[in-house]
Length: 312
Image (cartoon, rainbow, N blue to C red; front, side):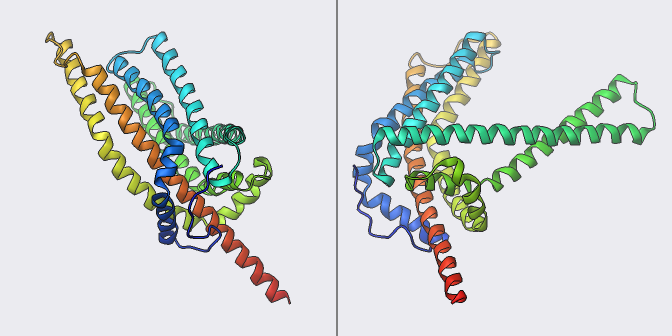
């Protein structure tokens, strides 16, 4: 069991700044214990993602073969497993349960998230298809008769496709924003060890929606910070991809490959370091989510107490 030195209480009403500050203080006060506890699992995740990047380099600028796609699918599966183990290990910091218990919890939460993703993807496809049918009917009614000119038909199809893509992106953005309170639900599922995901999903999703603005603002600030740091640590990979792309173009034009022989190990080493740092940043975002949960619980308790006082 891992005991973190926690100076600030968890269940306390906080604004977004105080929430991020509390997460930062908890992380920095215990960073040695946290890294000692988590680094092998963060490294394992980075190792798998590094192989995924190497496979991307291999198929960059080419039509991937069946074997390449199978390798990509296998690496994605290994990545999901590594993430489940990583999150299971991390959640031991918050609930004091065993590693096996948290892995099973993480597996169940992942399966639920996959199910929700499938459901909302079908909703987005349905919305896009409905608007696509509406657009097609509107185009035909606008001209009075169906178009027979192939060029005009192609232009109409391209326009409809672009509209459907915009509608799908808009629907995906709206649904993603509406699902932000799932962060509160997931953390509660790990912290309150006697809960069941299917029992708290809709109830606490509704509770989280009441605090949507607070969750959105907190995660927005954290996401911007992580995005800036992520961009900085991704620059070496971006440079390597760009150099590799120029090299492929030169080879296609009859020039010799302009990349050195150590390019592959260099790309793997850079991706390994980048993804390890990224895993640590994800770890910090979980600490923020932990205090988001504590703040919402405190606010809900305050509401219940106020209601009881007014009744008496």
